[in-house]
Length: 152
Image (cartoon, rainbow, N blue to C red; front, side, top):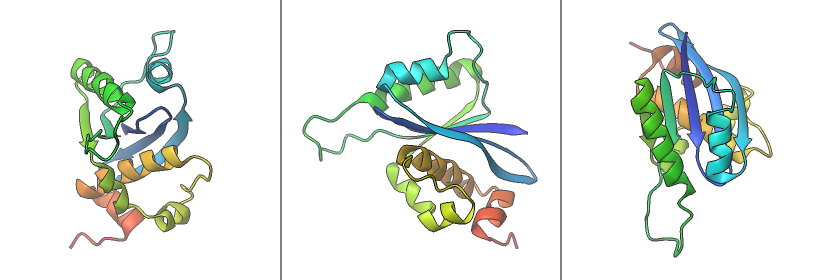
């Protein structure tokens, strides 16, 4: 089984952990929200016991400085740097996605598969990014399970 972790980074970072394989759709293993910005993220991603997980794929929303906010919070950009360094050191695949990738996965889809988690919007956004990654990379078992796409 391959392991994928997805993030919606920020002062509160959404996280979702998944498994999949060539013939098995993306399956949620766990989810949550990490408080504390960069420090909280580092505590989660690199526990003090030194036993961090090795991932096959990391998916994260990307920070875009679009000029809409006069003094934007750059916490997501700092977390991106941590993920880039980790991916480089562990040779895992890293994919950043614009925030509009979340539109690939509706609330109705999340609800239909028991992935809708009221009160955890950042965790749900990380789930949207994971599913959007699998959808846009044409992982057929995931497409057929969540999106009812025929591979013919």
